[in-house]
Image 1 (cartoon, rainbow, N blue to C red):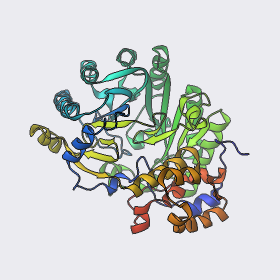
Image 2: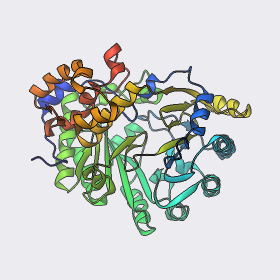
Image 3: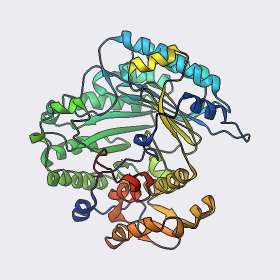
Image 4: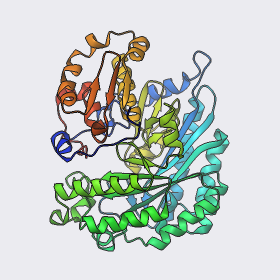
Length: 463
């Protein structure tokens, strides 16, 4: 019997099945949200949380869009500025949005997860960080030992800031690195020293942070096997609890900062694949286990433990141990999940401020999931998180005959099964070790929206 974390790297299979596809931080994916979905629908579902006498715990997400400098590879919603007058005003409006959502909120206000993303959340001054967390705590009950995380740019953070974050209740940190090679850093406009990164991680450990995650990107300009091998040596020395190894998607037509990257300086497809294989070999040799997609963790990290226990979940922050949460989201472009709905906020500051000036939630678009959406979301979650699917459990939970309902999908899986990516049985669908890097492509088979339009150019490649 194969281990849940076992992984087989087969370059020929990867080349064959490396198609464009979603990352499935939600299903339906955000590009399927519609503008006909408005603020009132979200308000209605916020009020319905306690129907039946049971309400899920809460996960809070705050999007802080500000950055001091621009990283050329970045595809996030961000605002480049050094003006803290902008962030002070932004927090005024975050307060307004908090009050509007809380006024409509039914059920318990118990928070088990908090995440500050960006942009660069540590752009905020110490007083601004205190203010934001105090505002959140004034409205919600934060459980002890919850999962409270923040994204950190080591170039802008000192020991005092890390100590403050720990005092405010943060116990998990995501550290942006991407690559330690100086030539690559210059090409991407993110020059970051090894020592300053190490000092931030040491500060986090000494102040009680329970998990430190590090972000890396393969496929960046001027990157090669030798340079990234040096980066991996430094990463392994720093010994983060989790590692996210993302594939760089060069889409300069969609993301203007990427236009400053020279196409000729990007590693070719074969080199990029070799860099990925090298990274997998070195990380697994160093004791990290493969969680899924582009995530690795130490065997005793909560993500690895949750996967072994069947509790792993996937949401807009990636893999998570918090499965049954309603997610409330605040700030520009942030996405909420409440009951069977997703709602995304306006993407620009002007639109965000205008809506709140009218005392309206700044909802740009969203979607209310159908019974079919909920069924397929469950299947995709199971494949992405556990590399397996119990056919019987789906039939019982959704009152369907799996073979009848998914006849076309099962037929489409046959080529993947013959290639050794999956094993399809009467009671189980199992992603095999050779298919685990390609789990996005396998999950796509069950995506009704992709089956309808086959339009995949909007997505990055699977590998």
